[in-house]
Image (cartoon, rainbow, N blue to C red; front, side, top):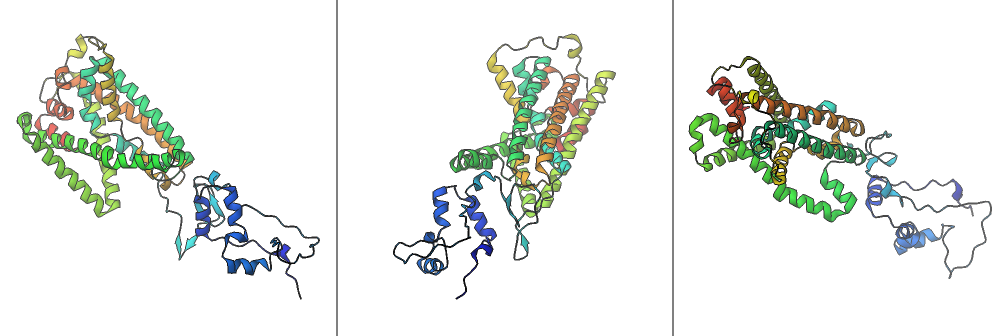
Length: 407
């Protein structure tokens, strides 16, 4: 009877689903060794393998003569799989996302790897578009009224930008180490456990994201009503603003549901208009400060005669409220990490995106606030939630306020 040459046998091939199961399971040396032995399989399969397995020992069976010149090794494969994090399925096993591989595993002709398409410029557009929003057009009132002076308000904007930048830099490190879609939910789940990730997701879905969307929508409604009605909008019912806000929110939601590409293009277009609005406000403010004249109203001249730190608040609570309002304007820097898995090279591009976008937004915010100071009196700045409309009204008249409101 011919004997099987076990030394030349190749290890059994593990398909992608088995690798995924092994890689996602909790590492347990005892369990792994048991599951890789014949005792972890069915009795019929065990009996079939025990007859041919030279490593199998059965106390009730007749002892077999020792085999010479043969060596065997029992490998507890993938006991260290938890160290290979994050994971992606490849033809050669599992490797860190972004690392070179031999090719994606395919099932029924479909690749298991996601189609990565985001570049540095896509990420930069995404971050800038998500950060620049209603905050810079509504928060200056709260920042100025609580800081107490022009100079103090600029200090608050600078500190808020630096704090947001440090948070974004931390997320850039997390995104490079764990280049998976999901953002905070993924990081909390993998670092502190599934419960922490679930609780964050629950809060985000039911509290954080709806609340943020509601605030942005109401500010949108106020801008539209103020631009459409004019000065009489001060006496308009709050439900008018809320109705317009609800209509705008529903419109954006429907357009995003119709097509993801349409939603992405809308985001790019809005980012361009928002950034150009800040740039236009800055240039206009500099021109007004240099010439001292506008096309419609009278520009502010108090910044020439009073000290920029005169009247600065000494109450820590007021500074905290002002800082919170400034941080709200920088909200959105973490949203890029929700799609970090779509970057072609997340380890390289994500830090570059963060460290380009944050200083760019900071400078834009500081320049816009200086322009507000050059054009609008302090009492107007601290009393208006639609400061861009006021700015356009003073410089260009009703048409200017309408254009800035729509943008």
